Image 1 (spheres, rainbow, N blue to C red):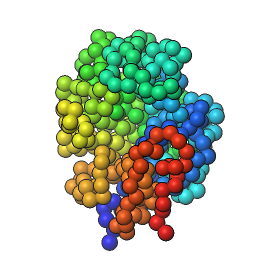
Image 2 (cartoon, rainbow, N blue to C red):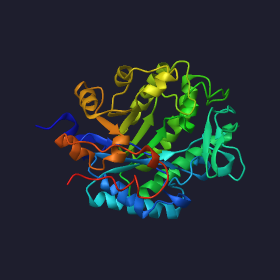
Image 3 (tube, rainbow, N blue to C red):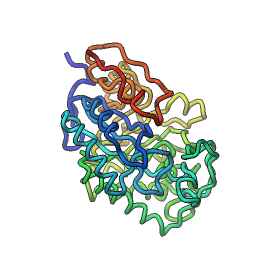
Image 4 (cartoon, rainbow, N blue to C red):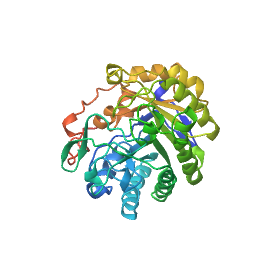
Length: 357
């Protein structure tokens, strides 16, 4: 008898063979921001996932905030990603590209000395990961109102590039303290124009991006990632449940492939998160929900059985277990991930984790 995780699920136009999703995982193994053959091997190893969501992928030079991250704004990058999508499809897998703009979580070292951009000129706590090592975050430049349509266009063009690269869909990254999340949260967004203040205004940018990306892909092949309870990258909000319930109700009209919700993590709670109950989000949203956030197999089975989610995304478990679907099916032991090899490097800790015999 199949477990809940091993049963098929429809996401957009696709019937996926299982509900086990590979979460987006930044690995920083793309020199010159161009996807590589090694990356193609890495993703192909994990093609038995019901769905792979790619690592976060900057939509423009302005959107970059970490070294060696693969991008999607020029032809060389599109060609590199095409080799990856082909490698996944040869193994009958499905892969969505995650569209990313880091906003203030960047550094002038990436931008020829120019400041990173944000909704408001508020310095995040912590350090940036620059090409020259860790450096304190700087105070970003607040975007002018008339600059925002240009960034919306960057998302649209990146979505078109993802289509050209052979992806099955795209996920808009609006979580984890990056640009779109910064606009949603009143701790980062102090604007007084039509993109700040009210729930409607703070949601406007993401909704405009969604509309633009949907013109390329159709809503049924577009997902969105959100972290309503997240504190990562110095995120705070005075009333996140109000914000995200409003947002989900607005997103209902699109008929998206899915929403991807990052649960409150232990670290978020430790950092004073104003946690949003998954039940409130499930009630607000009418479509398919993927959840993630430190799930193991038992907890994933439970959340699906309870009807709180339709699929579950796994991060670190997928780093260490390329054949996670098969291991779950057989209740086989899991490899332990090696955090020292998470970011940067070569095949060590990337494509050399052992598979089941």
